[in-house]
Image 1 (cartoon, one colour):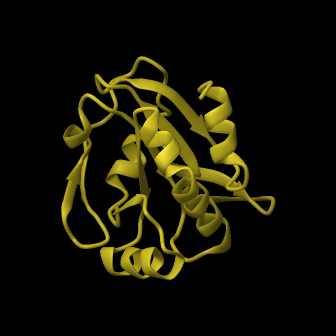
Image 2 (image 1 turned 120 degrees about the horizontal axis):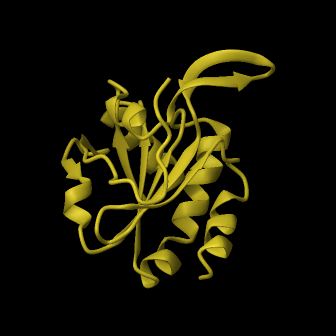
Amino acid sequence: MSERLQPGDTAPAFTLPDADGQQVSLADRKGRKVIVYFYPAALTPGCTKQACDFTDNLDFLAGHGYDVIGISPDKPEKLAKFREKEELKVTLLGDPDKEVLTAYGAFGEKKLYGKTVTGVIRSTVIVDEDGKVERALYNVKATGHVAKIIKDLGL
């Protein structure tokens, strides 16, 4: 089971491929706040709802100094299909080895329909301009999560 991050922790560095196979690093966003959200799988109903909510609020969040990055264990090809099909504007990164998911505490045991399984824990980590964890939210709901973040951040 991976350790969950706490406010004040240094956000683990990462470089992962986006939907076009281009490498994207957290370090590229230094000086900006970044909402990094982890989701189980592209092209599934809950993950689609969450990605569409982030896309719908992307300009609003950017206007308040936040970038948004979604990370799943999917390969870039599947992320590209997801982006095209749903007209997503958020940056989607693939972590098929689950190293970043694990480093962020977003992969491990969870309850699914009453059973304990190992998988992606739907999570959101908000990283400040200096690369520190501002907030770490685990076992979040796909629906209504973006609105809750906006409210909690007082935006």
